[in-house]
Length: 634
Ligand code: GAL
Image (cartoon, rainbow, N blue to C red; front, side):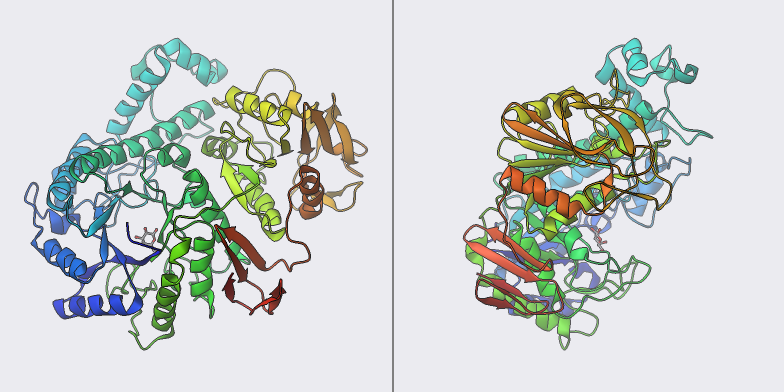
């Protein structure tokens, strides 16, 4: 890959006349661009008719970039099937859960289980690999674009047949499937594989275990589409890493722990919700997840934006200084690149109002000046590339638990996955604690504290892992509605929280979710929101109680000594989560800078310390002043 921090973005020269293409390369050099992503949606140009490949245009562009010293991240264009493909294989067009067959003319319009689609993408990857696999400009392969969104599940007949095969491989015999899915309920028992359908829209709730397996199946089908292309590229382009751009915390449909094992380097796309207060916290979360997926190794920020995106109701521009601050925030948290969607703003098509490194206004613009300034600054940060960020605290994140928690008919619609994680992440961010994400069954031994926000689904492996972690001296903080069901969404035997009863030293007799907007005072001060429940101690000790409501006088926060460690439990959503976390962090021995304003982000990466001021006033830290909105790297 490129030396130092990679800088550049998605480049679509095919949309521009030759004189613009030539000028672009000069401008890239001016800005210090050293890596661009090419060809992401260019299938119809690479293969205008089935089996007829045209690469002369691409040869010219890649050679020109190479001559200018700019490396190429070459994409396989499987996210944009051409019109001829849809006409030749109309059965490949995906079908939604509602039964609507979608049309072409956008992108991601092929069913991941379609054999014709897979064969065509592999054939094209093979042509690309043969032609460019050893081209010195090609330093990275970019398979597809953002697997899992907008296309996740497909309900076409091909998918249903593939789902049956997946089930047969997973369960072996139909009785095991019946047991796992609990089909005695509502008389859903299956006598034969051929009776099984996708969990289509019903008039009432469809079997939750069936829905979970369909989500797993969907993940595996998309992943298989990636793997077949990756294998061809490995064969024809030895030594060149292959990636696909993730959307880390923003993609519900793909189990990225599984994906991360298959890519050579993790890459991620991150876009802010412009109207969200403190959206830099979500940015940090996305970056921390990217690093965690790669096991702590540096990762690549494949896409973010210089300014406004075009797909929100109101697409606010970034404020002065925000372009630089956002980009450096990703570098601080482990990215070895600063790449944007996109190099030059399009004149036509669906994304013409999306920002770019060169906006419609051209180079006499603030965005361009900021881009050039940042390119220069990144050259001075070359030593940061390859270095690591260490964390003492992990938050558990399991995509299967995400899917399960948000199925229908739970005790309260107010318990949603991302929001529960957000609250803990934000409180830790504001406490200046750098966080990793981890799968509940992963090795947690390097963390002083592990936090499990509403980990509703927890199988035996996760439960045993967490128990061992605490026994060996770890500190665990679990919040309500955790450890309730197994991987088939079946309640663990005995009282809640079945998977975590012994670890937490308590049982829960009854859930008492609060009405919308409700809250209850806690004996320790502050209030609990969303949830209350009747906790019965079986070994743990009470730390605070509910001061009102159906569980008045009963525990709201508990702690259980187990082996050499400690397991905390919080039976509600406290408004003063930071205060509670301060106690938990202190007990676990997690050190953090004291007396800093919330808005100052402090992250250590290798030998450098990044100070990012998201606030409206200047801040001093160890004799250094960070201007409002500014970044200082020590
Ligand atoms: C990403 C996508 C890009 C572009 C961008 C716009 O999700 O990968 O191709 O559409 O959004 O923000």
